[in-house]
Image 1 (tube, rainbow, N blue to C red):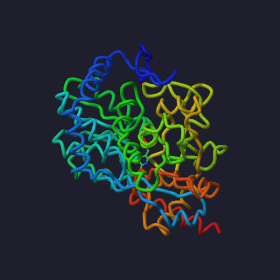
Image 2: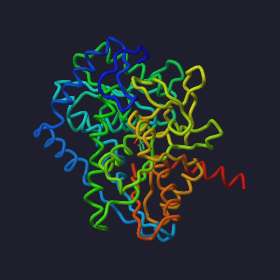
Image 3: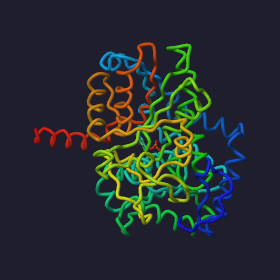
Length: 401
Ligand SMILES: *Cc1c(COP(=O)(O)O)cnc(C)c1O
């Protein structure tokens, strides 16, 4: 998506836009008008609500983590339990939403790309439920690293295309998916997994994820008459964070905190903190903060959690950072694993490593905070997928002691 074209609509300050090759303009325009037409359509929203509740298990609970709160010794910590959503993460909110839209648009075939496999699995789940043909592009190196997700996708009826070009990872899979879309726009819908890409994706994915923040808004009243003092969420592309934050953007009583993956530390160059350590640029059809060198070459990134390992970030986050409405911080691999282990032991909940970044920062915040303050943490997913990584990490730690 290199060639820059017009950038009307879909701007967040100077970020976002549509930086797409000419061949994709009709497809993006068709998507934009379909989304505009259906997003407030009562029948569409009723369908969406049906699948989110009856199929995916919404609403997810807002749970007072009493033991973690006592351990941190300060503010009250509440967990928004997206780990309990069908599929094991918030991604299902978006894949069901877009798959339903694709159906409305008369598209029979869904394509997506996946790195760690979580979005591929989420897409395959939605396609099976809605009887859509599903094809997933994945780098061959990622396919080896994420074998069980490849098996899941195939079980769920998806066709997984092995991508053998370039570094054989996510960015090559994106290129192949785009090539497919360009040649098959008539019957094919490209389902993007986070608040990234050209307009209207960042806005549309945010809207589908806002169910998280809207539920927090009403569920907080089980605990308090006030809005939460803080909402904390991890930021990869930024969809679980945008969905948690957006309904509170105009509520100045609530401070919003996005946690990026600090990897081995911001000075190590082995991290993916695009907002904290990146610079402006254009990537995957949008203007945003990117980790890149002085020649505009996208940097190599690292995080212990595959879901946060992305060199860019949703353009709305770039804007919210610039206007200072959201505070962005980082959390290292080490602190994320500590929080992962702590939440297992103290609360009986195995969180995703991505979500553990947010838990780690919330614990820090709680310790410094007042007893009468509430911190809501979005627990974006469950950690079963991360057991191997955590067990190897802890093993290595023991060996080095
Ligand atoms: C994919 C994923 C993320 C990162 O994606 P966002 O778009 O930043 O939300 C975070 N947590 C989990 C569990 C994921 O699967």
